[in-house]
Length: 235
Image (cartoon, rainbow, N blue to C red; front, side, top):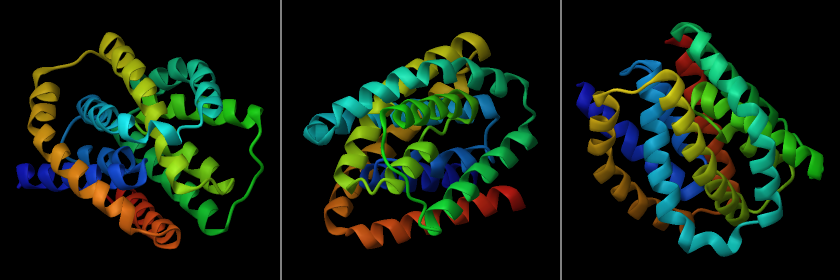
């Protein structure tokens, strides 16, 4: 049963990540926490997300906003050490509640049609919060999704810029977590098992991206976020 759940989580999250640019960590991390210890769940998420970002970036690099990407990267640096402290000193139960609250708050703001103007300062802030959440709970996506959705960024630019940022932030965060929290064989074995599922997710997700329009894209996002957030709190 555990293996079946793992297959479903990784496959679905890979499809979501490939088709939207942000879905893997939001979908995978909460459910991986049901199977693995937090250290293992977050490191598996980082490893497989890194593979997806690396596989996709060549095809979509023309849509990356390099100015925003650079500000995200600089802004993330102060957030990384804060996140690792949260990860090291927070209990598992509180960590799950924290993830659920973050997701539900994000979704509520999106449903209420949260809007703001894009500025350089806000780019840095979004990157900083994303860096904190990456090492803290393995989820860099929520602040970027909220920021891009609030500024009405087209889905192609959203997907490309977030994936480019993930390539950077996942690499740095994985190194930081391994150095400060350690790792084990289960992380690398499970990640190896997940690689074929990621390849399948890449194939199906690319096809889905070209078929889904902006409205359905947004509705689908809300449903996934609400389900994941409530499930974590109930569980």
